[in-house]
Amino acid sequence: MYCKMSALKLLLFVNLFGFYFCNYDNIHWVTCIISSGNYLIYTYLYYLAFNNTYFAMAITPKKYSEDLHSSHKLVSYGFSTLHAIFISFSATLYLLDIIDNYDIKQSFFISISYYLADIYYVSDSVKKLKKLEYFTICHHTLMILMCYVLIIEIHNDMNLENTLLYYFNRGLLAEYSVIPLNYSWYLVNTKQDSTNNMLISSILTLVLYFITRIVNFTLIIYNLWNYNLLLAVTLFLPLFLINYYWFYKLMCKAVRIYNKTMVIEKTG
Image (cartoon, rainbow, N blue to C red; front, side, top):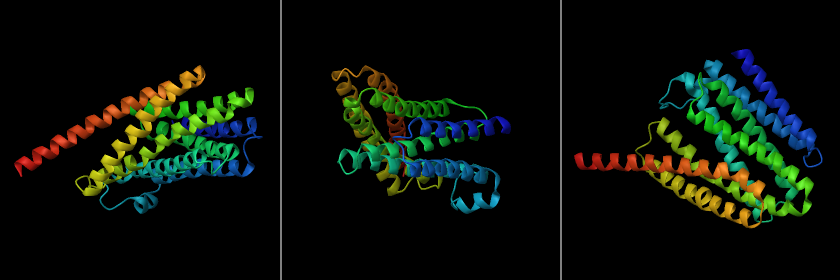
């Protein structure tokens, strides 16, 4: 199993470099170094959290609800949060015309390094992949594929560059909802799920999720269809459906928490 995972880790790393050499005219060499470093640091910290007791103890909060062996989840959620902050802010800067087309492509490449590292993490950290892990791998694979197709389409027709980059960055605004979502996970797993911070974080997650993923993605699909960009519609559609499914799951969880709170108040 270890040999297979090591091979997967190497394969994903080679994929990262392959993307760079196929798009060297769009990607600065400094970006390549940052992306490679991001991939290696994520996978190495995961390895340490899984295999080094001292490191696991150092990063684990006192009230962490899971055992020390599960501290690798803190690494995963930490990198997920950093990536969400980075890529959502980058997309915002692009949409506000603060950074240009070349700059945002650097952000895409750094983002790909996170997706590849997280695919390795998800594949390696569980004995058997379940629905959530499959969803995560499919989501990351689709995001990488969209970056590939985006660069190819722009290369084939430069007139589409501004339009495609605009809508792609509109879609990346969805990452804002990941920030409070991950914070909520941290609060739950450090036994702070009954605090005001949890209430605020949960509300913020639902509001941002609805605005950036449900409303925003619906409008993106509609606009792309009107532009007759059918390939873009095809790529966005799976993400559109996944977002609706995740929002449904979030609403179900919110209703359960609300009902549980009401029962506690009545019995109290």
